[in-house]
Length: 265
Ligand code: ACM
Image (cartoon, rainbow, N blue to C red; front, side, top):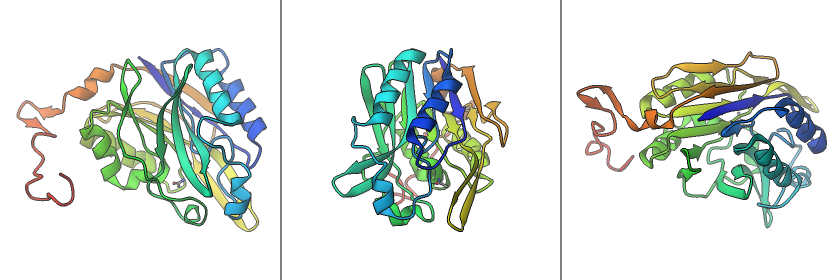
């Protein structure tokens, strides 16, 4: 199975430009699964919810959704991408798993970072993977990395790959994702942004270093910290089914959930 990421610069509020840039980067590529960054078509910083809602899309509608469906057909596989979603008067920082015939999976970011709390409603959808045929794929978004429960729940529910659209700002999210892979014996694909975004006196810098990590914690491919890049790598999703770290240690069977039943059943 061929999987990978798009690492790109994104301009705040320039949806058409961002979609065109992603399309240029993907030109000529084919893959089973490609992950794009969090909020890749809209950008990240908004003054308030009223400004952000102008760019949001109802699920399965809108320019970003239509583009994703078209591009899934062009690459001949599935895409996971971060999308600004609106439902009634609520905004969600969401990701979709989309194939040529449409939406297969939907996730809403559970753990909001910094100013996101002023704009988005925390995710309320059940955390579980989606079966895209060659693999079961779960989604988490950016700052979810610091809460090991998200990846754990996905892995306990048989995810083989965790797709992780991101706008990473703190410098150690990529390292933590190597640990998320090791402690759950799953593949993780982090698609991050590069460059800066400014809003009035706020400026955020995105740290790149998008990566694909194996269930053993091997970084199979890694992007630079400042350049746009599409990277693809061949993986065997079944490698995520073996939870042994030694012949004697199956890390899921060895979990002492009797000692922490209220934390994780
Ligand atoms: C983040 O969660 N976008 C830092």
